[in-house]
Image (cartoon, rainbow, N blue to C red; front, side, top):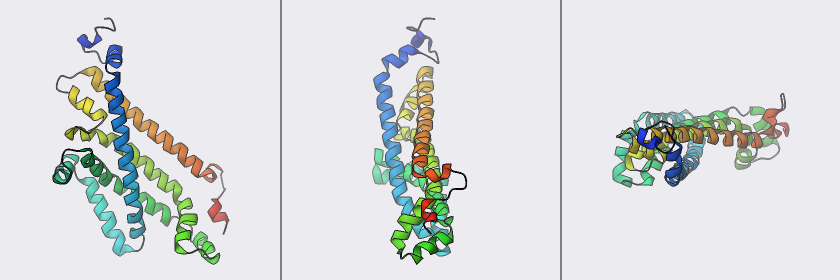
Amino acid sequence: MTEQNCLVANDWICGEYLRSRSHELADAVVQHIWITVVSVVIGLLVAFPLALLARRGRHFAGPVLGLTTVLYTVPSLAMFSLLLPLFGLSAALVVTGLVLYSLTILVRNILAGLEAVPQEAREAAKGMGYGPARLLWEVELPLALPALMAGLRIATVSTVALTTVGSLVGKGGLGNLIEDALPSFFKAQVLTASVLCVLLAVAADLVLLGVQRLLTPWTRIPGHAAPAAEAG
């Protein structure tokens, strides 16, 4: 079977498909990345103040963690149906749904990171005249970065996978290709889009891991504490 007629034969691996549909594949990848990045960034911006609110005490932590957990359990079809009257069939619908799904992971990891900051580091910073805002940005956040970045990595990989569900409204990136190929069971398209989705998730995780290592160099040195902790 030659490469040229692998489309006719409906083979799983088909070089002709990659060449003839390269532009379509590139557009789907770009849309997938755009939706993922926007969703994770907005999710992080929403999760951070929620985590700060949750750590103020049990009266706040219970509702915040409970609400984000409930949102995560809502099936994607139901979630999009509930959001449809507000956003219509648009990318905003998909992004909003993905943001809501990311909150439980991001809020819990940010909160865990902040709560793991040694009390002695806080006391030392306060003794040096640090106010609440400076304490948060210069002491607590640097020490919480490993947990925060771990949550960001999980949320990003999860969002890469969930973005495909956006194909329900035609805004699913690579998920659009998978959905379009299923009725006729176009094997090459299903496999290519699926593999690209997996590669995007792996690439995103590796990039964020690299960023984490750059931002937290002390974690690579056994027994070496963070600079912020050492300052105390």
